Length: 246
Image 1 (cartoon, one colour):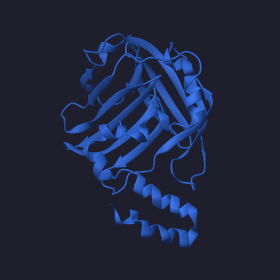
Image 2 (cartoon, one colour; image 1 turned 90 degrees about the vertical axis):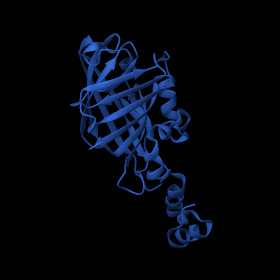
Image 3 (tube, helix red, strand yellow; image 1 turned 45 degrees about the vertical axis):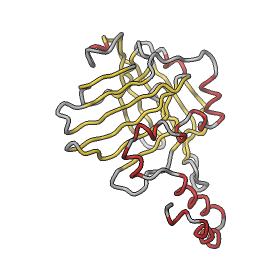
C-alpha cells in the first residue's frame, strides 16, 4: 500500500484543514496509479470507475428518457497511423443504452506516451473522462458531467446538415474543492458517404460530426458516425490502418 494511504497519515490533513483535505488524501488512495493503468488502459476502461452505475443520477435519467438506443457491436478496436511508430489505438466497448467505454492510447516512436479513458454517449459526448500521461506518477482526476440542461438524443440517428446541442455542468470526482463548470458541446453533421472509405472492412454509411466544445475550454473534434454500428469514432489526421469489430 502507498505510504500516503496508511491510516495514521490521514490524521495530518484532518489536523491541518479538516475533512476537505481528508477527502483529497483519500482520493489518492482510491485512484488507480498511472503505472497500473499504463499496463492495460483497456482494463481500466472496464473498471468500476467507468461503469454506467457511476454516472450521476440526473445524467442517467436524461440518457434513459425516450427511446432506448442499441449499438450494433460488442467491442471495436481501431489503429490510427501508417508506420506503427506514431499514432494511437482506440478500444470501444458497448456498455448499453448508447453508452460506450473507451480507451485511447497514444504512441510516439513505438512507445506509449499516455492514454485517455472515458465513458461517453455514442463515443461523442464525454460523461466521465480521465487523462493519464505516462510521465506522471498519478493520473488526472476523473472529470464528469453532473447534469444536463439540454441533451439532443437525436444524434443517435443523425441526418445531414443538422446541429446537436448538449449543455450542462461538469466537475471533478472525489473532491469538494472543485467548482462546477458549465459545459456546452455543439455537433454539426455533414454529408453521408460509404464507411468503406475510412477502412475497407467497415460496413454501411458514415457521416462526419464536427463537435465544438466552447466551455469550460474551447476545443474542436471531428468524428465519423458509423450508421451500421451506431457509434462515432475519431476522424482526425491519422488514417485508420486497422479495424476490428465483434
